Length: 303
Image (cartoon, rainbow, N blue to C red; front, side, top):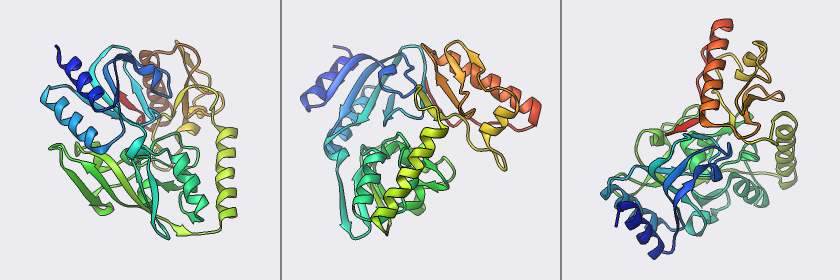
């Protein structure tokens, strides 16, 4: 029995959903990606730890994904195991005092924002509409409308590369623009503690609805995408620079720079990873040549 089969058998014995040769196009908001050797949905921290350690013992490359909303996966088949934190402990959310929330890394930002609103807690409105799970949002320090996830975090609990559970305070997590310590420390987030402020439920709800309406009005949500493709350059906006260069609607294969918002590359029909990468490179080269500004991709490439 090969290592993938052995890990699949172990995952199933633990009550996890596991599939071989799973198309990653089914698990990314870009709807792009080749087949993963193994795709496992885990619903408990202990099962996650057990499977992580066994995958490492087997020498299998490991990827952990949330909602697949900020990633671009290669067209090729991927000889790796993908873990998704789904349900169970990872979807739990609770108040531990009047303004502090503890929740699993598999909680969606939408669910977290609605929970905060229901409890009259303000500070997360900016995140309403970001199509991410909390663990992925922490990894990327996701943000919008002048807010970032790192701003409201007290601490994170994770599994270390050695398989130990550890909790670190915000000060040890190196949050900066679209960045955190999790991009380099090899740890996997399991739980997050968040501190908010008491507010007016109606005002919080109105602000969330306003942000969602702005997204629907300005962003091409009707097409598969990975959100904003490029980080915000200092003193500039990526979308404005791309539009300035006349690139709205530029198409390579099935990938297109959105005519609605130039900061988005959308999948207009059977786009490949190669199409998107070619369009990203074309865009970067054009913007650099015409404006002198170098765009840095925000989307994570998994290959």
